[in-house]
Image 1 (cartoon, helix red, strand yellow):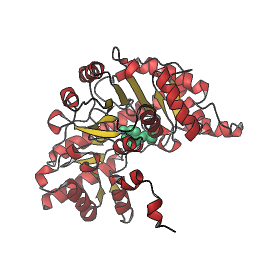
Image 2 (tube, rainbow, N blue to C red; image 1 turned 90 degrees about the vertical axis):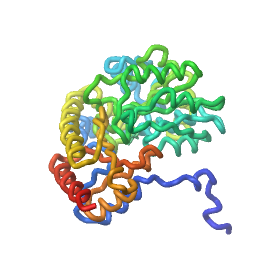
Image 3 (cartoon, rainbow, N blue to C red; image 1 turned 180 degrees about the horizontal axis):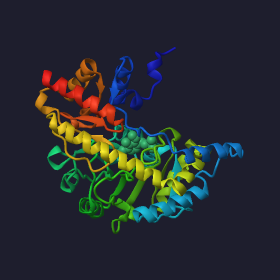
Image 4 (cartoon, rainbow, N blue to C red; image 1 turned 45 degrees about the horizontal axis):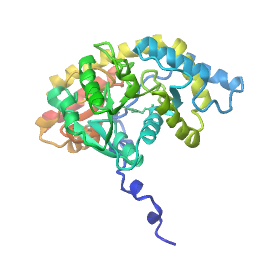
Length: 388
Ligand code: PLP
């Protein structure tokens, strides 16, 4: 028999494992750690949503749904997108319910890419983007969003990276890991580039519900963009439903039908009970979302101000639940800082470089932790910096 490793796909073998995982594993072995490392809400899903899933089981709804998802749910998503984001999509032909936004990203990329096609990936970004482009046979071309511009990408930096192989641009606002949110003018500038070069934009809007200072603008609501946007969203973040694995993707009909082919063969449908839960979340869950949002906003204000006070320069993140302070003045790399902070003060954060080159010199801290934990974390971080 050949060596087991030799059976692996070369592409998969060469993928780097997620840099976040290493820190989880390291933190797991240490007692008393305050974790600001995880990218998920600290709320349990609303009771009425959990109850709807239980009820669906009691009623025996345990079989597959339509491939694209329950029609009732798609209709509810359609109404939700139109009412809240001015992005009207047809429940029949332009929406697919997916296994998290993660699967939506995967089928979107696989539906549009041929080998060698280039996708512009704006960094710092969610760790999956680059690997998913590679797995779909494409080539990721990175463009850095810079600290000097509060980590908002400049449209002309995107333009400089366009070649005749470019097919799509991936953006995420509010952003993981920086929390930065693009306003209407900034989105319009990127939209104009997409129109000028006839490109598609994959717009990851999973944090759309969590915008704190300005009204959220969906890319699909910008004039002339709906027809060249693949909009990715879901229930994990705003509705505190990470474990339910439920997301959705909205796109023009031809792209949706192409994604549906992949979804049909590779997944069949999203989990049925989670779909019933999501239906309830959309029908009656918005008040709870507003409450959670208020709570994140309070914590953001406290935490970001505290980081600046202890000497870690941090822009005010407009959305999501991440702060992305600079640690450059400590002279440590982000990896060294995160590792030493964990070992010496038992605070887990994620080194910024795992999200892309321009993340180096920064750390990602999730403030979706209790106020007490945030206060204690700030105390420990201050002690750590003072000691350096
Ligand atoms: N997109 C971004 C920007 C994220 O931060 C995450 C999760 O952290 C996802 C997508 C995946 O979300 P889901 O849980 O819906 O798969």
